[in-house]
Length: 475
Image (cartoon, rainbow, N blue to C red; front, side):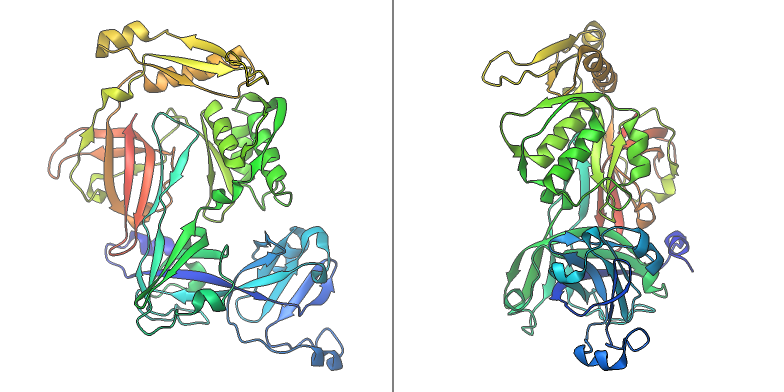
C-alpha cells in the first residue's frame, strides 16, 4: 500500500520517526566525474581506482545520512546520481553505501569543511521500519505540536509554534551527548509513516534545525528552530520600483550568497505564479534590520505570505479568498463539536496605507499616506463602529497603495466567523491561505451547512492518535 492509501484507512497503525543529524567530518573522497565526488562507506573503490589506493581509505560504520553540510552550506538532497551532475550544491545518498556530492562552484571537497549528518533515529517504541538500515530507538516521550498560523489582520507574518522533542535518558545514554557530538544547527526531521510502509515512502512533516539542548537524569530536551530564523542576519537594502518577489530573492542572497534563485532553494512554480500578481516596492533602508523582518514587511505590502515547504524550499502564496476551494472537508471527518467565534473587533471601517518612503527617517513626515474611507458609512450602518487601521508598506506609488487598500477593505469590512476543527492526519498537506469547503454541521443535522473557509492556522498533534487542528475563517 502507498502512503496515500494508508491515510484513507479508518484504522491504521501510524508511526512517528524523529531523526537527529550528528555532524561527522569526512575527508575520504574519490572523483568520478566533473565536479562529482564519491564516498563509499565500505571504502571499496577498486572498480574506479587502482586497488593499491584503497589503502588510503578506511571503512566507516554509519548506516544512514540525512544531510550534508559543506563549509556551512546545506547541500540539497536529490534522488539520483544523474541529478547531482546537473544540480549545483547537491548530494545523493543511495541509502546503504554510496554518497555523491557536488560542492559549491563544483570545486573539490578539499577546499571545504564537509560534515555528514549521520542519522540518530527515535520513535515512541523501538522498531525497524520496512527497508530501513537502522533501528529507531524507543526513547521518544513527546514532540511539539507542529504549528503554523497567521494573524487575520497582519498578512505578511506567519508564526511557527516553538517546541522541543523530549527523549528518555533514564539510562544515561545522553549524559554527555552535547559534549561528545557536533549537533547544534544540524537538521532534525519528523516523519510520518505506517506499519508495513517502506521507509523510503515516509513523509517529512517538519524539518528544522537543532537549537538548545537540556539534559537531565531522566530526559534530553531538544529545542527546534525554524529555518527562517536563520534569515535573521541584519542587513541594509535598497531598491527602486522592483518586483516585490525579486526584492525578497535579493535580500536572501545578500544574507546568504549561496542561496541562489533556483528550484534547489525555491518552489519556483509557486514563486513565478505569485510574481506576476504582486506590485513593485521601493526600499531605502538607513538602519540595519533583520532580513526576515524586511521580508515580512514586503509580504505585508503585497497581501502575500512568505513560507517554507517541508523540504525547506522557500515559497510564496497570495491571499485570495476568491480562489477555487482545494476540496471539501466532510462533516464526518470533523472530530469536535462546532464552535464559531464572531469578533466585531476585527472589522475595519477604513485603512491608511503608506507608500513612497523617503530616506530621511529623521523626519516625522517621511511617509506618504493614502486613506481609503469608501466603506466607512456602510460599516457604521452595519456594525455601529468606526475603526481605522494603518498599514505601513514599501509600495512604490499611490496606485499600488490604492490597490492594496481595496484588497484590505474587502477582506476586513465584515465580520467573518472563525472556527477550529479537528480532522484526521490525512489532511496533513493543508496549507495556510488555502481555501476549503467545510461542512459545519451538527452530528445529525445541519448547523451552518457547507461554507467556504480560508485556513488561518494548522497544528499537527502526533503524541497520541495523530490529528490536525485547523483554524478556519469563513469566507
